[in-house]
Structure formats: structure tokens, C-alpha cells
Length: 168
Image (cartoon, rainbow, N blue to C red; front, side):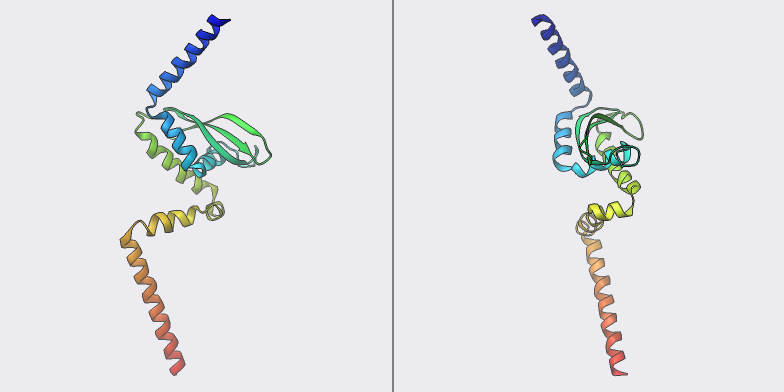
């Protein structure tokens, strides 16, 4: 038994080493996604994995367990309590030519999934607020200044119009 166990451990180790070599920083990517982008993983399960409640249970949570040049592997927890392991989510554009493409591809998948889940889902999940206010206006000072100016002008015009109505 010991030689078989050693051979099995060696094969697993070689496989893991190969995966790490094939997709550099794989462990950091998985950890980062699970810690900081749970919303993205959930929408990947809902949209790309088909866990939207129509033909399979609705996903309530998802974690990434592996990543490679072809896609992501998730564990999906559903609202009915079931757990689905090794759910494969392939990159929509096909195999990556290098690991550097990975970030751009998963960000594009994030936006595409939210877009396809509909306006109601985007509003309820906070996606609209985050993408338009937090990430949009607050990160681009020019847009923020412009928006404040437009709102200020609108308030000024409304006040002036209101005063005219009172005088007449």
C-alpha cells in the first residue's frame, strides 16, 4: 500500500506543479477571487453555469476551486441546500493564449453576466450603484465635478423658476 500511496501522492504533486506552471499565480488568483469577488463568482454560476433556478437550482454562493487557460472550476451552493462541485465555467472567447489575459477576461465575464441577468438583478445586487456611482463618478473627478455642476445648475434654475411663479 505504501508504494501506491507514494505514487499517487507523487502524481497529484506533479499535476499540481503542472497546473501552477501552466497558470502562474494560480493560488493567489483563486484566493483573491474567493475573498474579494464573491459577487462575480455568484453571477458566473447564475449566468454561465446555468444555476439560475430555471432548469437547475438557483445558486446562492460560489467559490472558485481551480483556474486554467480554458476556464474556472467552481463549487456552487444552491438555495435548496445542494452543493455542486467541479462546475466548469469556460471562458466565452475560448482558451487564453497567456495568463495575462485572465484578468481582462474575468472582468468582461463579470459585466456580461450582470448585463444578462437583467436590470432588476443589477439593481438589487448593488451592481448599478457600484458601477455608476462608486466606480464611475467617485473615481473620475472630472465626471464628479461635471455632475455636481449640472445638479447645481438644475437646482438654481428650479429655484429661480419657483421664485418667478411666486412673484407673478
